[in-house]
Length: 127
Image (cartoon, helix red, strand yellow):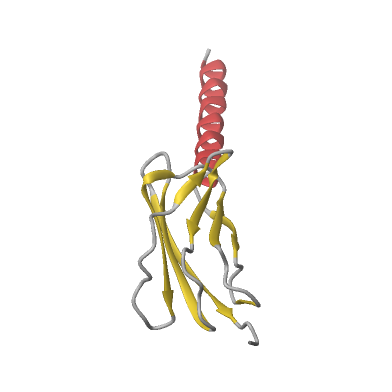
């Protein structure tokens, strides 16, 4: 009888650890961006696009674009793409002048956990 209880406890503990490991590993994270971090681009981007590992809650998600060392540009809030809600898009409604820019983002996972990040890119049009 004791052997049965011990093996059952071992199996349940292993299952709990496996489940916890899957849950921890599945948290929201940024997978890719356009422009990419530290990329130099030849045209002003019409959008800033962020690909996440899962769909964030848009109520707790924001993306800001600012010239390096400057104030954030006054742009409409970022939105999730209709065909893939794990993709967040910030429309850049004005043409960006040559220079360095910073993207600051915050995203909220479905479980309420938030993550933040930032990256820079350069516009160099050679006009």
